[in-house]
Length: 146
Image 1 (cartoon, rainbow, N blue to C red):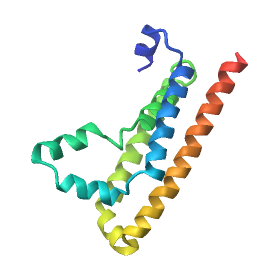
Image 2: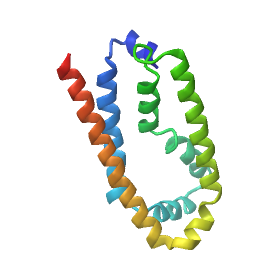
Image 3: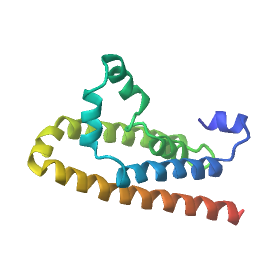
Image 4: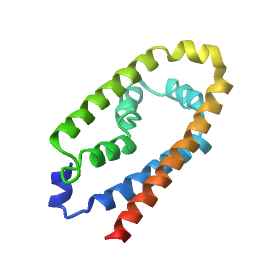
């Protein structure tokens, strides 16, 4: 990623700001958009071809926020190869935890219900929006500092 940004003469801070804006917009859809249940019900009414493409078209796990995070924490000018290797191991651990949570999601939804899931989704959207705004502020400070 960094090689591509360097070749295109795009500063990493510009990428951080753009990525955090996209992350903020994603958070707004969590807060104000349809609940995940409503999206899933619409998906069930679509054709088989549309259902097959849906997970490929909207990868929540590999979201712009996740890509932005990986790009910034593997910046060659700020982090050594050892630190970048640690980041790779942490990402692998997070993906393993995500798998465990996804496998247990149906039992958790049965426990909290659709209303509880909607509330959690909206609260997490607000937290995600806060993270995005914080990222934008930090990137702007970096630009202004030098």
